[in-house]
Image (cartoon, rainbow, N blue to C red; front, side, top):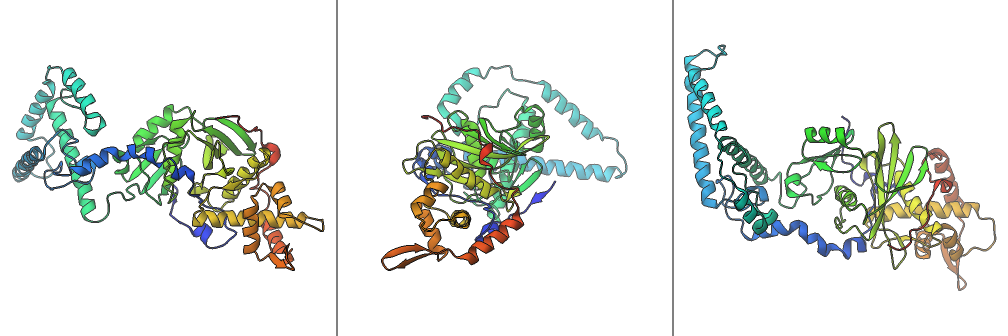
Length: 465
């Protein structure tokens, strides 16, 4: 399986004409809706107030829900008693194995009498099931504790198998605690190190607030079509066998060759958009919106082959923006970086603004990578406009109306290119032919394969919310 290594920032920090690898705009998407995100950490905050004890019975405190005795319906003292019992059982088993090794040669494969007796004992224990109904206890337990406690597991299986499960829980929690003590895992840090996404395994860059039971695994498996996240390769394989999704939900509003763009309403397809935001946070530093997706539209770009439409990137946009922002958050997936897709996403956002007959701009403040990416795009738009301009007088207002770029962005780009001068009480735009020639040379080398064709857009601005 191809493995994509982390290359954070290298695609856009090295040159102004980068291919828009990963961009983000800190916006009202992250500023006005953060209050609702508190539900994600509600249970962990409750645990932090009483972090006494550990499921393994070997530590005085716990830092994650998996190590919390309270979550497992136990007390700290009960965990210590169970730990002592487990240690005693391990010692007895080790002793019996040594005795069997001394009595029999290593080549003899037949089971010993002790092993046969133990096998019969296990078979008998698995037959025994407590017939007492747990329905009343479960009915009382669930409303009282909700998701802050583990469900009652008694009588679901035999006592022997339940005890095996408890031992596995304690061992997994102990392994996680060892990683924390060694400094490999920190509370609130990026515990998801990689994701399996389609035919790629992608190294993650930042922390994303997936549920703790998934985040602590270190590796997540995702369906690249419906974006559902899973714990193992086996679960993913079973999911893919029955998943009917082959493209994002919503309306396909653009198609040119293998490239398509789907308009997904955050209100109509809430789960998909939430999963998309959680995925994006693995590669964006400042994004804070994950769940309040209803006020936004998501424009998802895909590349199609005979297996389906594969996620290339997306940008989100407020349905009703007071300041006419045309992008809230934008991302190109790592496996498609430095191939021109980021430029296509930005160009597509301005194409929508032209259809709406509005002047657009990304939400402020821009992140460092976002500023570099947009500055590069604005530079290209201005140089193309100046190259095609044949008149004698030019105004920033006319440029803005024809390109849908905000006048403020045009002025700041002209200043950075040293093409705006103040002379005899007037601001003049200098047509620097050297910059235009450099742009023409780069344009000829890149070709026209990664461009947006306005004639392929089949879209009308949505009415209302």
